Length: 72
Image 1 (cartoon, rainbow, N blue to C red):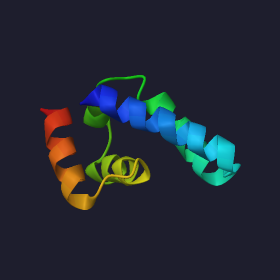
Image 2: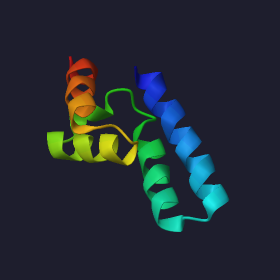
Image 3: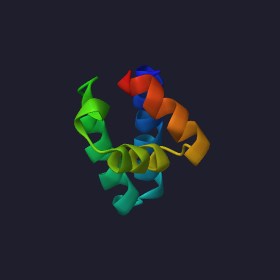
Image 4: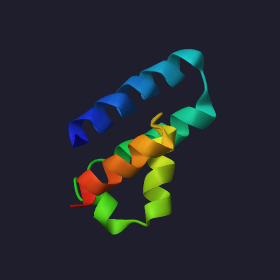
């Protein structure tokens, strides 16, 4: 599950680099740094976690399931 997040983040960084979308690329770089810690979602608020999931392209329903899996 966690590796899927990292893969999606990597693909989005490539995409935003190609598109020269600096604003979204910066977000993905920050997310990449956070994802260096497998326990990062245990150390942040639910709102921050959901914001990251949204930036990675997950729906609200997917985010709920992801959050539960990653924090248990």
